[in-house]
Length: 160
Image (cartoon, rainbow, N blue to C red; front, side, top):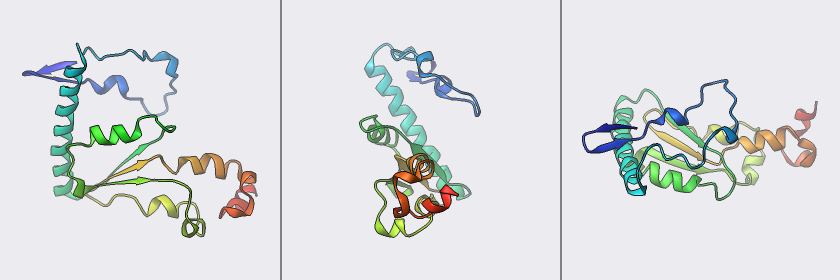
């Protein structure tokens, strides 16, 4: 943890996983506090990070060169909604969209697999959040099409 004036900043390095590196959750301490003395200090750091994120969003919007996609995957009650609420609290809602993938609609079932998530990708200058991703479709529908038979487009092709 580093200090900047009176504000404390969370060192995010402990939460980054390098591409290709395998992790085991038992190697991480669930009581890790990042050096914060109490919850109030941690909340202040979160607020500071949220303000910085809001400023960075303004630059993203102004440049309109890239879009950002955040995918949150977790079981029910894992904290996905709370993460969106707190981390994105200072982001301009006009430049951010949240999509929750639930059971596919009839229209979605009539299209091939990538159609569903691709239509929600953020435009340049925008931030998109997938609250529970379409990833479950990859794992369940594509790996085990026998669970769904012909009711899922592409299930027959996935068996070949």
